[in-house]
Image (tube, rainbow, N blue to C red; front, side, top):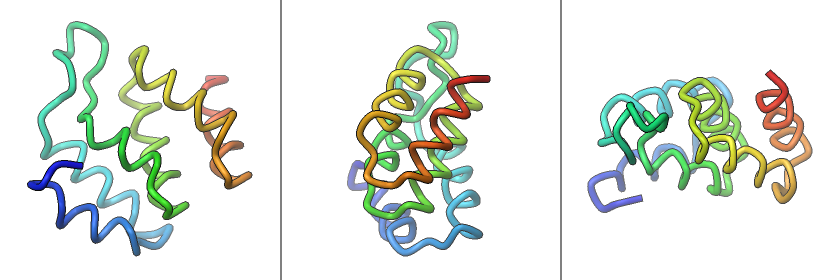
Length: 100
């Protein structure tokens, strides 16, 4: 997460299951996209960073946002979390999003 995103990162590190989705939605709307939407990746790069944060609530919220936005990189990131995330809940959620 870039310096300009630092405040959002700090808030996400301690976010609850109730607050994390709101913060991730804001992050998704405020930050520049990683690639142009016509390439199928209407996703801010910082969402990929959130998917690797220690906070489970933040990772679940980022997974939901990435699944909703779609794109090859988003699907690859969700697949990685299915294989490697330490939280069974995050792995399950990512698998569910990938099955849709």
